[in-house]
Structure formats: structure tokens, C-alpha cells
Length: 114
Length: 115
Image (cartoon, rainbow over all chains, first blue to last red; front, side, top):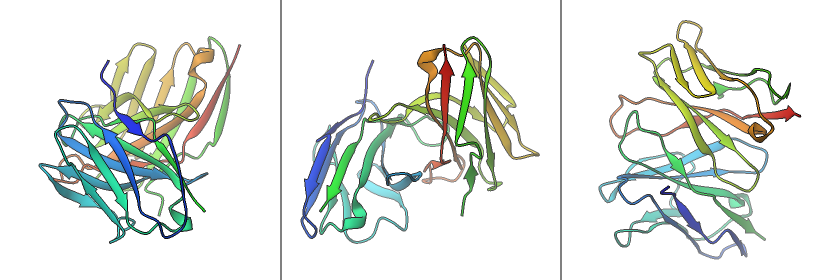
């Protein structure tokens, strides 16, 4: 069964460093998303991406964040200068379409900022 | 601002019995609802969804009921199995708002199925 994959599974970085989290969405999916879950809190939407551009972003997704689909398979989330409060599980998701299409999630990357 | 609420942080059920997980929402623009199951150290796994044009959707042991007037949905698992023990998230979206397909999640309910 096709699945969303994410690398690395765990990333430790120092405050102020740049990190890139990588995702390979399901191959025939057209919509891509990033969510995060801070320990003990809800899963929160960060950004959605369609047709090579951001279609929607949340208040969390400020100028420190960017997304890119550098080739036909990868989808990346970059945090330019990490802060302690960026420590969280980051989940990539993809869906076949928008609207009433379920989103399929990857296993997540645990980001720890020290 | 909790637009999607799961008021029970945990639920314990005997194996073979019915598990009922509840979810309430406040945003009347939500028209598509999903349930996800999550094991520790894994991502949410899609279980079942329902559009607001329906009031029930069934898939095997899982049934989701939607009461739009009450802004309430529930997930029924019958019969419950020990492998169902996980955290269950309710999520909602505004499917008709073009370009806005973000899911808004509840805090989750931890289900424990006791053998």
C-alpha cells in the first residue's frame, strides 16, 4: 500500500540553525501539507501546497518557514533559524485532491531544538 | 479557540464491547469530518470520514455518525479489539472553500481496550 515517508525520523539541532525536513508524498497525490504537534498539544496545520505553490498557510507559518517541491517526488519544509519553541513532531501529509479527499500522513520527524 | 473538541481525554472499554468516541465542533462552515487513529511514534492513520450531506458512514467495524444540528459526531467501534488501543483524533475541514483544505484537529481521546 502506498505511504507517505519522512526523513529523518529524529533531528536534533541548535537554536538558530537551519533545518530541512523531507517528505515523499504518495506518488499520484496532488496536494501536500505540513502539520506539527508540540508535545501534549493538538496537531496543528502549517501549510498546504498545490501546483507548485502555497495554497494556504497558518499564522504559525511565518517567514522562518518555507516549503519546496524540488523535484517530482520530494516535498520539503525548511526552518531558517530554529527556535526552542519549534521543537515538535512535524507531519507531512498528502491527498489525491482537495475538498472531500482524505489526507494521508507520514510517520513524522521529531525536531528537537536545544 | 477550540473549533474541534474531544472532551474525553481517555476511554477504557472491555474487548468485544462497543467503543464510542465523541467529538463536537463549533465552526458551522465545517462540512467534512474525519477520524484518525494514532499509535505512539507514528503518524495519524486515516480511519473513516463523513461528508455533511450524510448522517452516517460505515466501514467494517467502524461507523461515524454526524448530527449537524448539534454539531456533534461520534465514532463507534464494534466489536472493540485490543489492537484498537490508540489515540483517536477527530478532524474537520471546509471542503467547499477552494484552496482551503486544512484539517482542524481535536486534542484526541486515548482508547484502551482491555482484553
